[in-house]
Amino acid sequence: MNGYAPAEAARRSGFSLDTLRYYEKIGLLADVERTAGGQRVFTDDDLGWLVLFRCLRDTGMPIAQMRRYAQLAREGEHTADERRDLLRHHAVRVEEQMRLLQRQYDHLREKIRFYERQSGPDQRNGSS
Image (cartoon, rainbow, N blue to C red):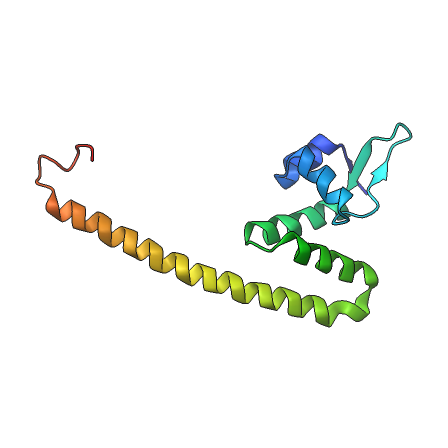
């Protein structure tokens, strides 16, 4: 099993060192190993959790739900249905957000096309 210094774990996960410390403090990351000198050493399993947390955070899952998911996972296999349901509900919210963003994107593109049609050939490369 590989061990990663905090800076390497931060680099690999895309989280800051402060975020890693915070996630450990609030219980998202549990039982992070430490050297004899007290420095944290992250395992491949910890990095796997961080990849999941990155996904959940980037898709807007609140910290409280992330904590609930992590707690359920640590409780064992008998919580698999509840974890699946939590992720399914989150996926529905993400899908709704994607649809909203697509509509907003389409609106922006239409507005850009409107301005492009309004511009004369000599004004298209100008600023506005």
